[in-house]
Image (cartoon, rainbow over all chains, first blue to last red):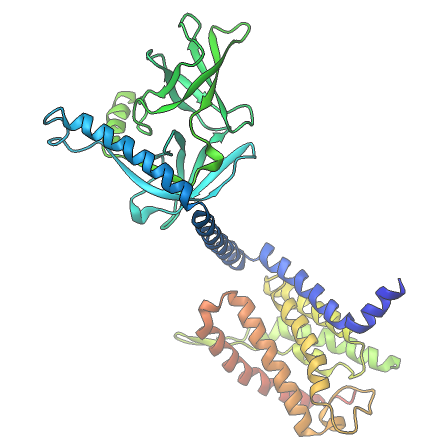
Length: 269
Length: 174
């Protein structure tokens, strides 16, 4: 107690000054619209700056790993290319429907109920709202907000995620959702019970929405459950990709999305 | 510190706040784009507090008068933070420009007790700091550097003249 009093006798003025300055700045930031807006904007700006700075370091430290996975990925793409180019005139004439925009993941959460990612590309690079995001092995999420240089992605590990998927080789549409707080597993719902599904089958996107193209491999069936009183399976899906460890994302730009949406809206009217 | 000092300072507090919010808040000089003159006179209270007032108390009074002015300016915290800063700077400044023989008065720093040159230095530095802080916090971003600078300069000239006139008319003794 005496020490505290001595401390106050020594630095009392400074302590009082800091205390009242803090109080008044709290008042300013909470009750003044202009200052509040500036405060929030600039703190977001610096937070994003800091995130991209740290992720640059992390990227540097894991260069070897990234290189390996890029090489593998490259090899796979080459395979596809060779396979396709053998079919003459298939791709060369028509414009491609999907463009992939490579991006770096600069912020990624995975231990919350609703997880989000931030990518280092934005409007300038052509990202728009509601575009899908892939990683090398699977799907990452859907773009929700875009600023000039950054985009904010709702991760697949989010309670709001609903991705239209199916089990190969069937075409029954099911919803892929995230229920069980485990970043390795998701749940596929509303596949009817009469479909013969076995453990180890591949789950793919079905391409019914404009967000993800068809036949992107998402994961494998790990467990098939039937809920009581339901006519549908509840299928536990083990994801191919490790979402918490994603360092790169590929934003899918669907060049025909507008056309499809307009046509579908026409039908709704 | 006797009772009359407390009474005088309390009255000064209320008179300055009321004068600030009822009179000087409403004076506005706008010549087209030129709107850089604001009359701010309440820091006079902080300047004229008795020299030997405990410094944490000075900071508290600075916060209090700033908050009272804020209530009428609809800007919670902006004047208060300026008041706090001025009150803190006052202590530092008093140490800095202490006369050779020290402060041998229990009264307020006025022209009569401290002499005109000392008082002018003291009040102008303190008041300038107050305005600089106030306009910086009001803009809240140094992007508006130019506006902050112009506001400070012109408001300083206008308000300082008013403050000196007030001192000349009322001639505070303590």
